[in-house]
Length: 219
Image (cartoon, rainbow, N blue to C red; front, side):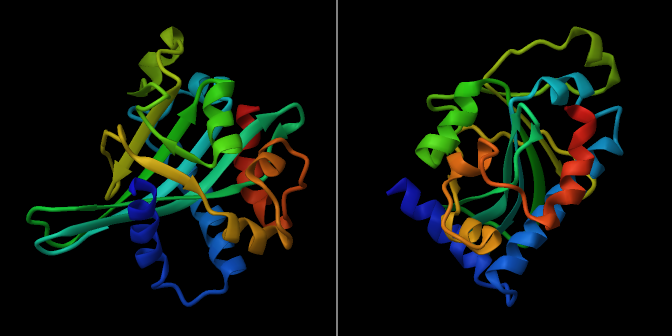
């Protein structure tokens, strides 16, 4: 039931797009690259490079929350894994949910989710759907230059968020995230699994080169 709800909400938001599935996925990849750059632009409240360099994987999402009286949340993004040859190609992921209570207007939040353990990456690659804070411990990640020297792994997953240009610190505990197989098929031109993409067995499309270049400094 939970999986049905968050994919329903994600579908509602995705349905507003008039782009082809391939172009929509390319836009998600480009957005992910821009999100990392925006986090790098706020070093005093950003992700310490040591955290990025130790990461086994990264999930990068843009989530929109909107509504009036009731609310809906939907988001899309990509997941990459560190491989022996650098970073894998991007794997499409999505999240969503429904809420109650008074809500007005819309809010867009960008997330970088740092996967610190092989098990955290495998949860996506082999299961397809993950609930943060369930089998995976999740915590707000250390931030800023002052944290650089004392960074250690305190949870399987670190979360970072920013909203309207500010570091937000929004909690993602209990959030469901799932692989978008149809988007991956459109982007790679054939049916591929998350495990195929994240292991590096499937070469990344040319459109992922900008993201790859941005992440290369954290290899």
